Length: 287
Image 1 (cartoon, helix red, strand yellow):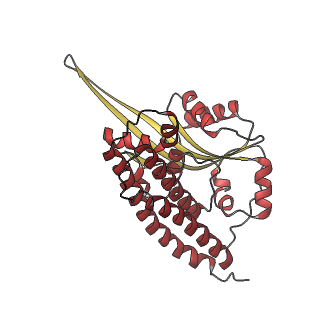
Image 2 (cartoon, helix red, strand yellow):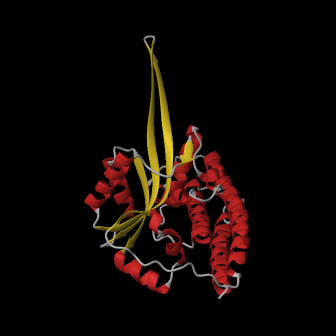
Image 3 (cartoon, one colour):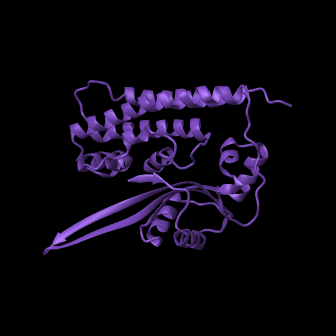
């Protein structure tokens, strides 16, 4: 089962901070979301039964650092192994200089997330700007969202051609790119955040914090579902480095269907979100 929890067990939080600080020169860490999962395993052998349940956590953080993080994936993997695979991190990285520049110019993503109640570690307090509301801002959000959706539509339309030549590995690259564009559209319309790191699983997991449509893409329990998700995530690698194609036409079709459904559901979510934003940005601020 998955549930949203407000806090981590104290000993896990302490260890997590220690691990992060051992890898990076940290200035501040802000918590965006925690999801706690319980894995139950059941063994029956020689009339003896054992039931084990293990908790593990998925945590989304903003990490502000005194130096640039070159490879976020490597950092997240390091944290995962140092936390004995109990904590899976999805971290958004900024340098301290980048944050000060963004805050002086105004950044709606940061003004919504860098809140004092979200601080779990900080060397020095940051002065955070207010959320900027204005009809011009709304137009900007809408335009960028539409541009991402158009890109996704274009990529998916290329999968619809009924040609005789079939190349599943190439099709999956189009699926990967389409899903990636849809995720970027969701991150923009909900958080006003432009990802600087485009790993597909990472983006889907960030979107999972606010979007129900990610349930379409994320793998179900079945082996086939996990295999298709894996093939989509590693599509570029498989196309470039695998000489043998091990993706069946059925799996290719399954992946195409996922991308199409994800786009449709996300577009609905996006339109609802746009109408909320329209109201928000057209409120006349009282003096």
